[in-house]
Length: 252
Image (cartoon, rainbow, N blue to C red):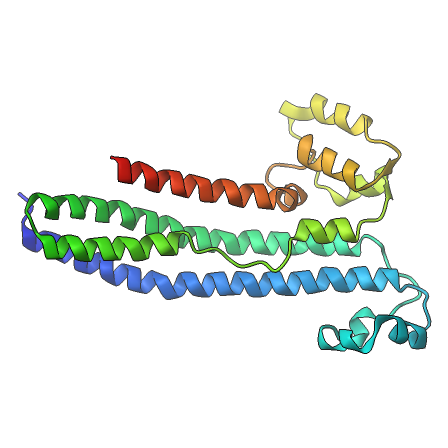
């Protein structure tokens, strides 16, 4: 039979684990925010560089204005003779891959917190049954802290999908396909071929979204643009699911 002493030891162990996770999760989120900020800057730089292609340096400085010096280094945005208009999209793809990797770290700590939350529920129930009111209060406070950490999310000043839309240039079908990692699985071969055949000769932003987000042409393991375009909906869904799990706990 489990004793109060055993429960107390478990509570102490959980408390120590939460104290260990909190700074690690916070650091992981801060790193994500830093990576995101850096990525947004790179996308904007690529966009500005494309806009200013062929413009004389003196004229570019006058057009861009000195205030941009507070944000960008001139060498990063001053015009060049030739610059790919797809560089902003390529940067977005690269950055999203890095963010996905960092998000794995955040999810690892969040999953540990969910496991802790489950253990605390059991401890709370055990203490209540034994009328250990002070311990119930301690468990409740710790659960409140764990819940706060579970819902902690990185802050984003803007959305990469919005930046893509801002810097999007109409492209050819071949250019569009070259940016994607197409799903070549046997299961979807006929479906994907049909979608590719229906892509128009020129691809604008709405067409880009349609084939990337609605028809999902990318390989499911490398669907970077799909992730970017889905980001807002995905995050909302994750938060709704987290809330649902907590509501289930409260009602049980």
